[in-house]
Amino acid sequence: MSAGEIAGLVNAGQLSGEEVIQVHLRAVRESSDLRAFITVAEDYAKARARTRPFGPLAGVPIVPKDMFDTAGIRTTRGSAVFENRVPRRTAAAVAKLEAAGAIVIGKANQHEFAWGVTSQNSRWGNVVNPRRPSRTPGGSSGGNAAALAAGLCTLGLGTDTGGSVRIPSACCGTVGFKPSKGKIDLHGCFPLAPSFDTAGLMARSVVLGLDRRADSRPTGPWAPRRCVATHIAGGSRAMGGTRGRPGRGESPGS
Image 1 (cartoon, rainbow, N blue to C red):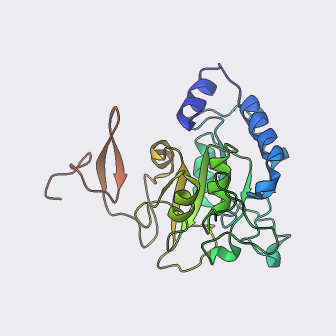
Image 2: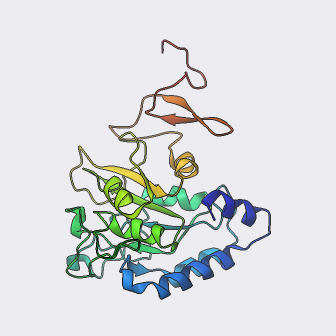
């Protein structure tokens, strides 16, 4: 099911967040040979599901790349150097997805410090492409793409400095979207090259996730100055950094 379908059923009471998480955690355990995860946050995810999350991403299982801090969940940045690092705060992008009802089920494997495009990792093992095990899964967000391709999660949050969301998505047959720089807040995300780093969503369809992740009050030096409407099925929504007809409160010449 898509993120929208899961959230719709959970919000309607036709499916519980606990049921969704149990199914996905079981799939994660059965697919450990893919090495898509550095950390599986089983206890954390189950506890979150018991709170009966509500919202546009209610009950949706998400997997952030291990570059994003997650309070109470180990965040290694893909390196043995930070093997035992457990942050006290959650990265802004992850926190906003959780505020929309999403549930973190683990942290995705990656190239160490996101410095590479193959997701080979000497400490956590090389990520396997679920569709073609003999082929590279791409990188550096290879764990996210592998987890999505294998049906282990519904939404992934990656980083893209020079293709790290787009390359693994192409290799694993999933969808990776790199939005305009500053569209997704990078506070709490370990930097690789700050002037190029961008957070991006990974899924089968990223529109719903971007709608929830896009900052209504974006901050930072690269935040978009205005919000421009983009057309999607069933209407239009505001998404900064794209071209289209003027958004709410804007004139064609603004």
